[in-house]
Image 1: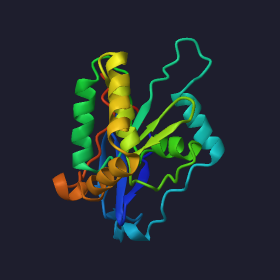
Image 2 (image 1 turned 45 degrees about the vertical axis):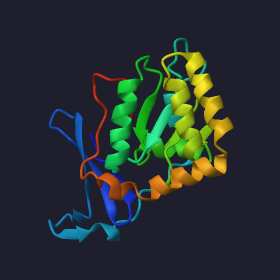
Image 3 (image 1 turned 120 degrees about the vertical axis):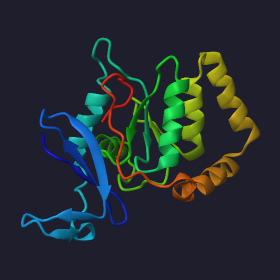
Length: 209
């Protein structure tokens, strides 16, 4: 299996490594790479990964949301910053609370994440917000994404609807997004960054890539 390289941030790159059996097991983030001669190369000299074309992005979107297929999995996908420790801890909490398994998750930096962002009209290099992508191409951003997650992952639909209405009624979007931005802008200082990216657990179909 080929290795993938993504830009995970300024001067930071992610490389997925495969085992000898061909199964992807780890994803390493580093600021340096190795040339064909074995010499260390500054990752900033490596061009950023190409943006997916719309045809490529649509192919991925249709794989993730196979609308029209009997029994298709159309659960929303939460895209999160794969190098953010704080974000990863939040995803752990979300997966634990999602007892009805209504949410899927993937890193923003993954090819899948970049493709879904492209189809929904968002810059695939923009890692400033967690996102929720729906099968009808709706995209929830910032505090709306957090509210949408609470709505979908709630143990009962009535509870989810009540949470959404209460949050939007009690807190204006400007206030909600302002608070979200404060946390997002300082997320790396809260718990730091990973040097390895978590990859899909074969036993959990909610983590996709």
